[in-house]
Length: 200
Image 1 (tube, rainbow, N blue to C red):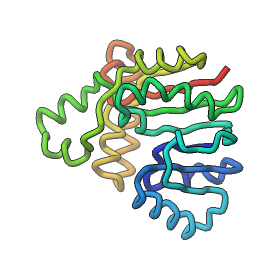
Image 2 (cartoon, helix red, strand yellow):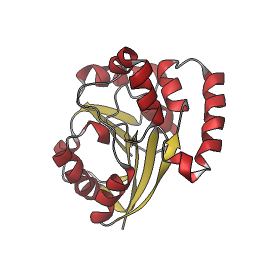
Image 3 (cartoon, rainbow, N blue to C red):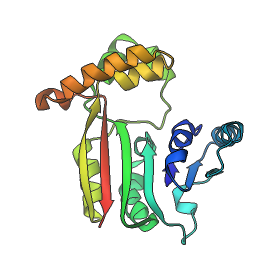
């Protein structure tokens, strides 16, 4: 498995016991240093972290799965449009990409910018933006991927970001999210969307 934009490696270290080999890459030297230190502390031997972009990976590098959690929305348009072709090159036939990113229609973003603009600014970098799910699906389909996409949540992910230790609150918010997402007219206002794209 390859994880692009792995940051501190927390998700990757949770996944490592379930895969044979995991490579995490990020442009943040501090993030990669922390990911390596966490892997060493936890005794994880099959996860490797490197300061690198996907474009710099070896041409021989091929993966069964690629994880891109809150990564695509950092890319400017030309890089976003080129990313599906690059990911196809890095995947074995039948390999899958999983991506999770903020939706352009997110109700939580609209409410947050209106009521808590300083808090929103604190948790966002200058290169971040919200993406349109149908457009992202189209970019992957153009490169021959079979794509399943949908909206992921309303309040659970923002709550987890603001209050990471509030596990009971997250579970309750996740339950409410799952109910709301069953209603298609409401689902499009979800905070984030996810896609699973399979290379044919």
